[in-house]
Image (cartoon, rainbow, N blue to C red; front, side):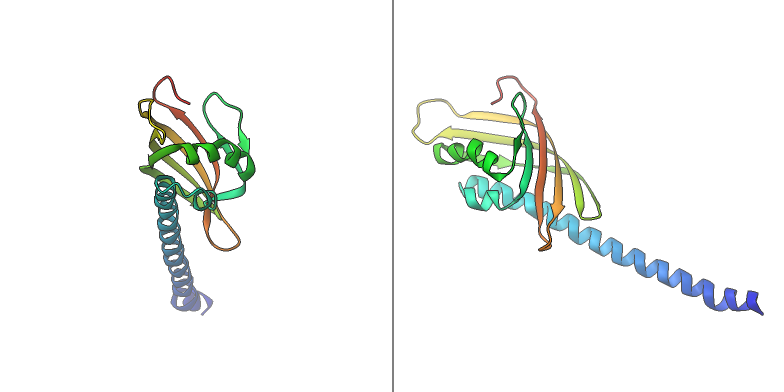
Length: 161
């Protein structure tokens, strides 16, 4: 009798619960990945539009920013100190074709390539182009929005800034 109950009731119930959980996880994961990919699309738009405030809003308050051959920047104020003058002095474009996105427990790891172009607004010097690889760690905030928490990259050529 117990075996019959397990076979006819408990086992199908277990399978239904597992299936229901799997579907929700897949949906949440797909929505999170779409939100993370959108984060980087907004990043590139803010960069091109010289929207420093909009760009900074895409970073966590305690962001860790590790550029090649430079000390790490920790926090939005440090990033602002480094990039604020760039936003004021250059016409800029940026693209981040994303590769793999992995998500777990409110965190994501993103691999990408990048290409950046800088041209002095005052003119004179030739435009600067840089491209390379980057790993981002993103964090879902208490407000549900994904932000860049860590960025570590290297360039594919010498002469990088």
